[in-house]
Image (cartoon, rainbow, N blue to C red):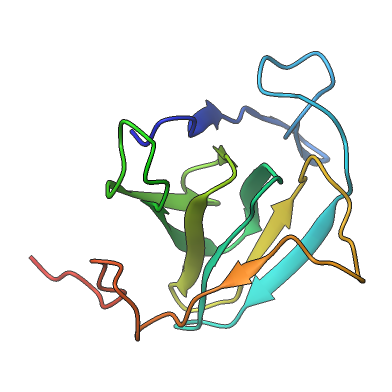
Length: 151
């Protein structure tokens, strides 16, 4: 696992009316501070990658559909520099992925419906000076292939 990346298995509590799934609480071990909450989606097969932050920690989950999340440790001073992590997240595997600053990340919607992701970063988005560095999803030096791996 990349240094600083943490996973929380989310518990789905169903009843005859539907279900409830807590994602992040102020008393969670992973919680540091609240910045904002936002939802982003990707249509099947669409890649939303790569980006990283200098200061922001992200807390991602997929609330509808399925996504393949990939993380790459871009930090030169990290004990896991150059390491990759891959997670399949969503309806079939409810996880919260905490991504520290300096770790490149992105996701690809998999399956036949859009992936809807919820992020609860620890900082609010600064429109005048965004803490977001973007890298092309395919034309880069990250050793990751977004294609389906058919065994």
